[in-house]
Length: 175
Image 1 (cartoon, rainbow, N blue to C red):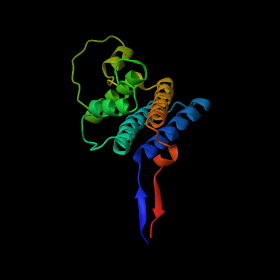
Image 2 (cartoon, rainbow, N blue to C red):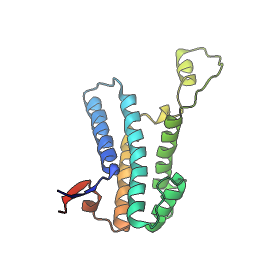
Image 3 (cartoon, rainbow, N blue to C red):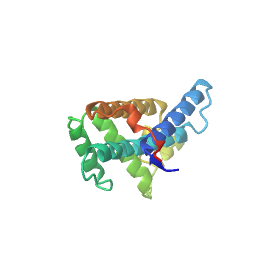
Image 4 (cartoon, rainbow, N blue to C red):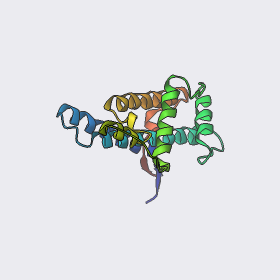
């Protein structure tokens, strides 16, 4: 038997982010904050990956000679233009998408930080030991970023005339 298979990773990544967000919500409801910052980090990284996969999906479907390995800013700018909007990393929805991209870069490239510091309290020491993304690891930011990515997805699909059914991983028998 022959099948035409279509695999679209943006769905898996958005489903992963949704699952992680639900884990965070359950922990909050149960007043169990164990590891919640790690859950937030996992969710935000999944969201960042999902944005790039979404951009690649729309680019693949709608832009001739799409370059999957082009620079992120070039890709998102082209896809936004195809959707009839301007990508400006300092404005609204796009600013949040850019923040996700930068968080992803900080985590992915994990640059060591070595400093000498004078502190008088454990809190000051904790601040000095923080990672660049630590301030983003809150359930509120996760909720905001999740809504932002879903809004971006809807904008792209609507403006690029992509039916949600066309975005699903599938296999259809052809022979």
